[in-house]
Every structure is written in C-alpha cells, then in structure tokens.
Image (cartoon, rainbow, N blue to C red; front, side, top):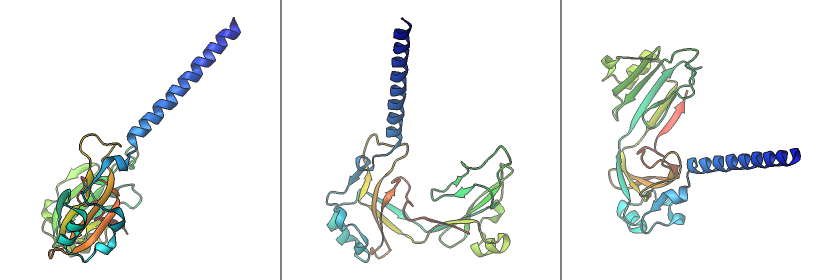
Amino acid sequence: MKIKTYLLLALAFAIAIFMIFKMLNFVKGIETPDLEYNTVYSEKYNESQFNNSLIDLNKIKIIEKFGKPLKIDTIQKFSKFLYKNKSDSIYIDCEGGVDTSHFNMLHKKENFLVFTFDENEIVKDIFNIKNSERINSDSLIGTSKAEIIKKYGNPNQIAEVKENGEVLFFSNIKEGAYTGKMPKIYLRKVMFDRNNIAIKVIKSEGNPLNPTEGLCKVYSN
C-alpha cells in the first residue's frame, strides 16, 4: 500500500514539474517576439535589393522599386547630454528618457542632469534630478551647447541624431496583436535629405513606434 502511495505521489510530482515547465515555456514564448510574424512589408518589397546600394537614389525611384511606403516620419536632428556620477548605473536612451532600472536606490539617491538640444545646438529642455527630486533648471533653456560644455565639462553620455530628413518605412508592425512584450519588427526604412535623395538605409531589428530607431546613436565618454 505504501509503495502504491509513493508511486502516486511521485507521479503527481512529475506531472506538476512538467506543467510548470510547460507554463514557463509558454510565458517565454509570449515575451519573445516573433519578428517574422510581427512584420508586414510594402507591396513590392524585395529583401535582397534593400541595402546600401539605395543610397544616392531619389525618392521616386525607391518607391517605384519597393512600392508605396507603409509609414512616413519627419526627423529633426537633436542631441542629449547626460551628466551623472560615473559609478552610477544611469543611462541615456534614444527614446527620450533616462534608464535608471539598474540604479540601486537602496544605498543612495539618484542624481543626474540631462540637456536636450535642438538642431541649432540650443538647449530646449532640461531634466535635473538631485537626491531623487526634480529640480527646476529652466533658466538654462536657450543656452548654447558650447556654453553647457564650458560650464559642466564633457558629458558622460551623448545621444544624437545627426541629420534632418524624411524617413520612409517599407516595413511596419502588423495590425492587431503582436508577439513579445514590446513591439519589435524587422525595420526596413530609408532616410532622405531635403532634395529627396536617400542618405541612410536602416535594415535592423527594432521598435517601429520609435521614430529615431536606427538613426540615433549613443556615445559614452
């Protein structure tokens, strides 16, 4: 009798472990994006022809080649400066925010300063945190980038988009539900200058809802 009970308990335990394993794989599957499933392309899109050979072609020729773009964005060049304690796990990102997810708030309070510059390298926005509290620094709005560097020195990190232009998307996220925690697809887009000449081809993976994805670069000093 005891042996039979032990066998039943062992079987129940094995089934429980199996179900937990299946559930973990299910959750992992939901969180992991299927980029092929998430991505839709323009009518005439051709993967083998979408590369840097498109640079210097005009917009009309590229649309003729790949079809009507699925989305159009206008991008203005900008830059952001982040000042922080070098040892602190605080980072700037290209989506306009500051990543403090790795900062240990149990041991000390966060301190950082972020300047956003417009295309003329003039401060248009300031985000100043001291001891985890927002500090008003609006008096520095309108200051030039050169003056900020003179006053505060070189920043710890820089995020910037270096060109103005129009961006045509030849891929986008499908309508309805997508896979993954965040929207992520195979990005296929081309940036054009004011003369409608292609100056940059973006062929990567990323968030189509972030207009600077693939265009913004982050540097550390």
